[in-house]
Length: 253
Image 1: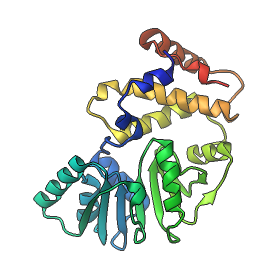
Image 2: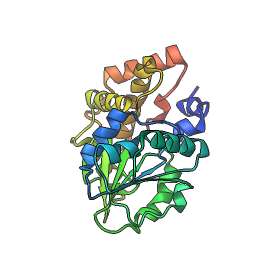
Image 3: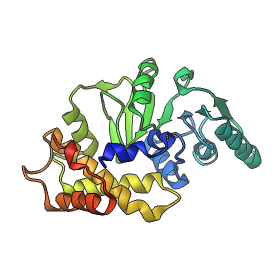
Image 4: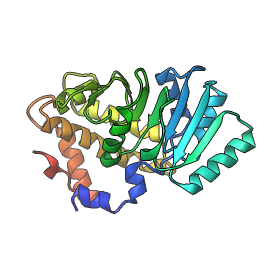
């Protein structure tokens, strides 16, 4: 089957990132990356069970932490966890993030893989006051160049630096002049490690998928290293086809 068909068999909330909980150690890395501190008002859009809010208040001493999620189950779990740990100045809101009031935010964590969600959120982000940091994972905000990158963590700060050049955006994220197999594999491993999962034995499969996706996107944009397909890329394409019945080569333009 084609990779698109395989992805369509996965739960939509997994593809969008809605129910993937970021591990605590990765949350701490994100906060250090964002230089989160006592003067910040931190928002987590799609906060899940609220681990980021507790860490932001308890360990990084932010002024306040606000979590927004459209799942009643997640909000209820987050409230219980925060009450059990007796942490103050945390607010939880059961709400569609597209309706959220972000006017007092200074740092926003927003990780959704669904491009429609991110495109719609841009209308809200563009109204933010200057100096607000928006942290994403894997990709920058649509149509924007990042101001800071420690892949897979990416920062865009208002006012955003806009671009319609996907090639320029890709190279800004990977901070290199061209993308080869080694770069694609390294960054795929970083991403897989950062999001963590309940079944880490499948990490290698995810790294293969992500590395091939990175390289193919680079090739299609003309920023892959060299003209020919690396033998390692060819081998992993064959492995996906033979052992998983997943075809990905058709994505090459």
